[in-house]
Length: 96
Image (cartoon, rainbow, N blue to C red; front, side, top):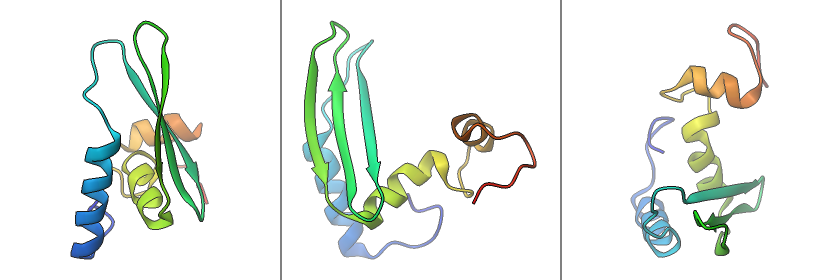
């Protein structure tokens, strides 16, 4: 989340605390899904390997959501191939 640029210390502390509160330890086969709500924040849901679904909660901070999902989707991602696959773009294509 630091890759696009520096974070204010207060935001970094608050975001880390929120993620520690929301995200449980996952077991093999578990999945956490996130919904980016531009201008609002993010919501998260845990699906256990046995199919049980558990809402984890929300972080209502638009800047957090942009930085969090930017790990995979921002032009500054460390995994540009994954970004292209997620966005359905080919190499060299421009994504707004």
